[in-house]
Length: 420
Image 1: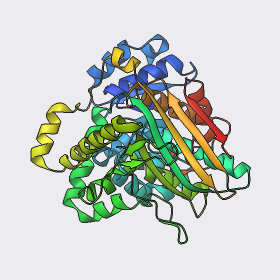
Image 2: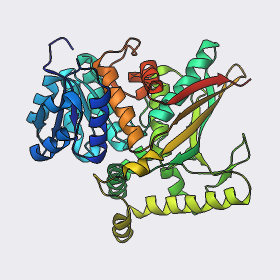
Image 3: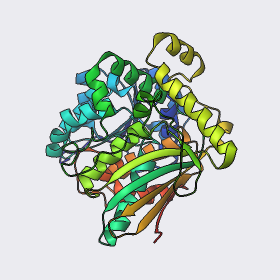
């Protein structure tokens, strides 16, 4: 960005549940020198959000606009150095803003968990953003920062030893908390689109769909095992419950693996994790009969819920019990949230590396607000050590080590060790 901008960060979608949490995080942790504005469709609701924020946030400007008004979002992108948006489903509402930022040389980060949206963003915005210098960084929440940074830490450690990554696995060892109504609405929207259009199903089923240049010519296919899309397709053919080779625990699909694995594949293609890199994610349900039963029950429920979103009768039932967009848990419920994820990677030097990503936050709400807010601040403050990159990026390729350091300062655990 060469021209001076009026603002440093605009938070679009500040009146939604996660948007309000992100606004509070920025109000409490952004330096006073960072010029922040709140944006959304309703001035009255924006004013209500601003009244509840502490300190200097009382003077933050408000911007009223509609996500689909291309002229308005282009004007917004031209006024600020960074746009951070929580407005989804991104397939419906995200492209005008992402494209405007790519064209204006404005950095951008979001919370999307939609493979189809990111695939379209790569096709439309990557070259434009490379030319303008914009970092369009998708998936800056629980989708997919823990996965992407966890694998990056292992890749960096292996590279320091002169090696590349091979077989790499992420295990969700523990997680307490919920998925936001916006995340569920995005999943619902993508499920409907995939049901209506076979071409989109092929994109979503391709583990390398988001990788730059597609699947490497000599590289392996990333296993679909662990990805919900792949598991649903063959749920009647084989049980999704397996055993963790490291500890013998029973495992099942991780609901976000179908998106996270694609984001990590894009990072692998841009950062060069190695031709032998292959990656899966799964949930750990423990050992013994209890672990086996829990894995079977939870996996069956997950498969039923994901599959049910594509059919009107079951979708109507799910809509009555799942949180709606803008809804979220109480402060007390969020206070008990937490997650711990472990990445284990085999490398070409024969060594194994393990990284841990954990935090004492509700993953889909308070934890996501920290991750998104710190992503925006890293871009706005142009942290030393940011990757020398522009285009449509991932957390690892657009934010990298500076984001790791920022999250560590906010009670996140991000560590890596060589096992052998």
